[in-house]
Image 1 (spheres, helix red, strand yellow):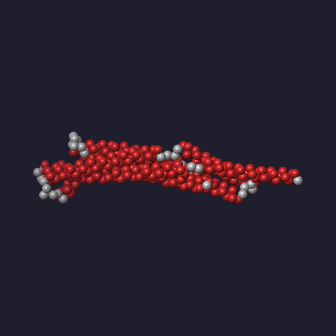
Image 2: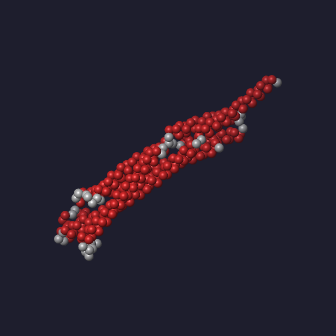
Image 3: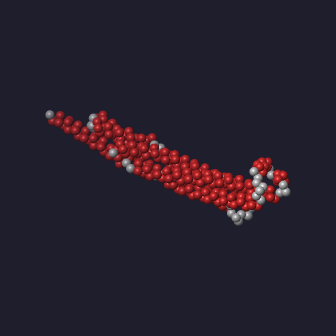
Length: 303
């Protein structure tokens, strides 16, 4: 009789101990896996802002490029008008042009308006060229500013080391829970409800093993670098555009043409960099959303 009582007492103590172990393991998972969702939510918001800023930079850079191209066409008309004003006749202009310029010049002659004198036309074209140049300079400056802001946002919007460590700790606690749950199932020391609850937690939280949390930082680094490059090109383009559009410039028309071309190239580069940064920020959001979905599922199972 005494032996049977000891056996029953041992089984009761063992079952109580196993149940306690299971509860403790669940509490450990709750402690290590909780709170991750809130931090990822902050990263997602910042990445969304960075994407919007980069997209704005791409738009302003594109406007700068388009305006620069329009300015180049106006400047070409000024050159043709200057040549026509100083030439005895149209044919006298042709020998000084290369084949490409001859084709452009002949095309310009087809729409030439002889009812307005050259001086008036040149004056109006110069006004238009200056206006377009100012717009290009302004939009380049705006694109530069957005690239700088995007670089700062991307550079700071990263998974911190302690979050990575927390996710690793979360996975380890889930592994321990899985082992304890298996043991409790084998020795029948936990209720079906307890085992089911533990299984749901393990299934939801072990998904962290499928999340590449480092990709979030890689995308942030790429966006920061690209935005930095865009900011550098934008600053150079802004300065070049401002110089070539200044009333105090003291260089010849050939150099002016080259500087305008350089400014347009830099505007295009700035726009491209901003677009690339926006794409990288967008992919970072996707990676964060994936991690956030796992965090929500895990924390939901723990509640």
